[in-house]
Image (cartoon, rainbow, N blue to C red):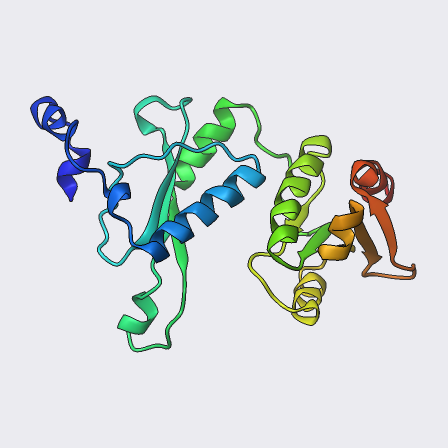
Length: 224
């Protein structure tokens, strides 16, 4: 497999006409890959499909990835990882899906310094937790959260990772320490609104239009 990312020019020339792994995916892997791309597209995250990307660990399954920047020259890989759905079971545990990555702290700091974006202080507090229910709502939540973050870069918004019942997602929202929960399901999506529920103190749940959400959060959270 390591031949795929060879730096040897002669070997690279041979690989130009070699079969691509993406052309030989089974049905399950193809559906998973298309779903992953749909979520990246919904969140507005740019990506490049690299059929020659190879990670060094043998337990990865389905997807491997690297986060790269063009600001650090040869040290452009800031983060890399992949899925390892069968690893826990191989080690004697229950079948468990998983994804992991390694991030170079020094490179991350160097990148922040290069971009002059080193934060004055680091806080783990979450301002808003976005709960989504159903496939369509999950995709819409990704798009909505990115739009809000673009408009309110200082807002600490966390979106629920993966599916879950209403009760379980609200439990996560409360545990995160968020001040407010946003609720997006099929009914809200049809009306282009999101439920806005205070988690600390008094206040009734209300519906906020997608287009008015950033302004509402700016008043309630950012401006205090």
